[in-house]
Length: 162
Length: 162
DNA sequence: CTCCTTTGGTTGACACGTCAATCATATAGG
DNA sequence: CCTATATGATTGACGTGTCAACCAAAGGAG
Image (cartoon, rainbow over all chains, first blue to last red; front, side, top):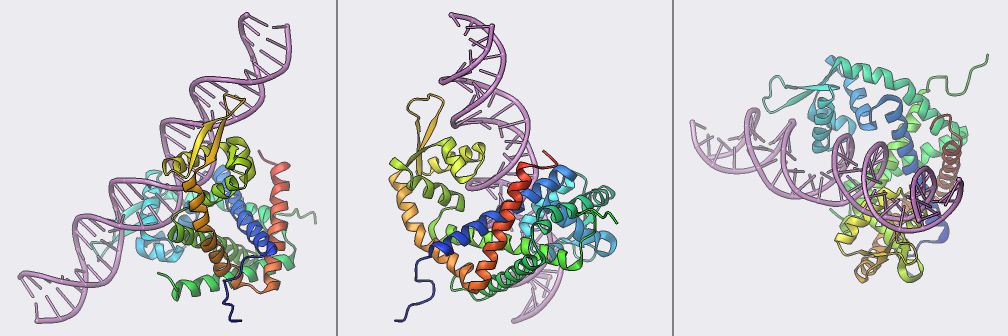
């Protein structure tokens, strides 16, 4: 029998495991986003951008560099920066030395928003995620996530598709 | 020391575990959605709705019942059904016995779309998720997800907020 | 210098999700 | 019967994400 991997149907257990995993992680994501929004009035995307900018020298970064740092597509970042700029959280400036480039600069308002959101955000991470799990479960969750991450990265680099 | 849970800052390990978990599960979600889209031209939301309808008696369901079954807000379902109806995957009919009600009915086209997508979808679940993990890791993933799900449900029922 | 390709970034169209508002029908209370 | 409220569902506004198209400046080859 030369049964290839992936040819056999899913078992009940496999399907149930998949379902609870994918649905629960989605619930977690959405719960966290809701907390951030109601506690601090920003989205998880805002938070990610603010955090990255706040740690950059001069609290400014080239768009492409920022996109790489947070693993976003250029277009997504461009749209998001547009919305954040409208709210005064960041500002855009032309990049010195490359007239194509744009820099995103953290505003005072952006710094304030990040400062206000950090503690509630950490609190929510603890309450929604860390508090739920035993140390062993947390370690297992990390192991599973790291394994999955490497697996997905490997598929992404050498796919039978794309 | 009456240090309350949730008052202490996150450790490096906790933060790293959180980050890899939340980011990887998001990657997984998006990878799966991409496969479903490119293999079968439907979204994960479409799949969920088609599957539920296909298992319902008469392949039709009341909107509210469908929303409950797949744990969606009414409004979300209404928008989604509108998009699916435009593509011919489902059709809406007035509910017998309650003139407020609407029923979503699976069309032939919808059945076909579900049939076409099932095998590639299962294949993608195996390839992206199941293949990555050892049986022990899969069991651990399920355990973590179930624990989290119960934790989130408990918070949802008896929150210090909302 | 001129053409060509690459790089950096924006834009428009569209799918998706949430929230608040709306509307019509059902149903209970008087 | 009449009114108040609850229920079933839709709508509009808006933030978010992806894809493809686009535009401008940079860099290299001739």
